[in-house]
Image (cartoon, rainbow, N blue to C red; front, side, top):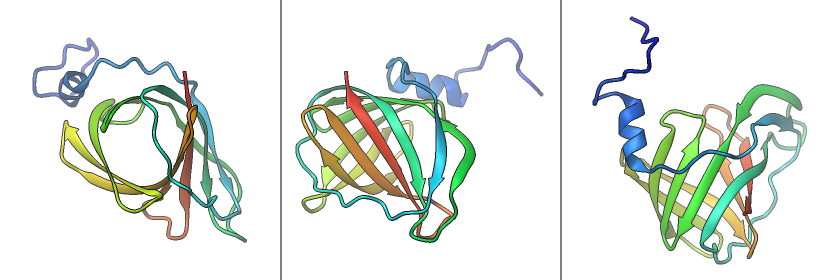
Length: 152
């Protein structure tokens, strides 16, 4: 059955995600491109508190890998406060809250605290005004999603 009135019940994914945070997702919608190169080396750093909007994203497929448009888009806004990160995205779930940890000088671990408890690891580089995160792409061995966030 299709819900055409946006009257989701209390157990819906929309309601659960909305309960995680109320961060507006006002980042630009970006088209993901496949780029035949290795991802950049990450250097770590201190992630400054503040609101960040994703300003660039690509899938690095490795030297000799495929290149061109992926046909996918992305849109993400994050708000960092210490080791807590609120996330608003066009994906499902639309809102999550994450606890950050660090594993080495250029690797971070995030543990979802709402709406689930999934954990992921990524390489990163942070400056006073930006954050670049490199994540492995599921089901695409050797490919990495490179996300660039700019502090507002």
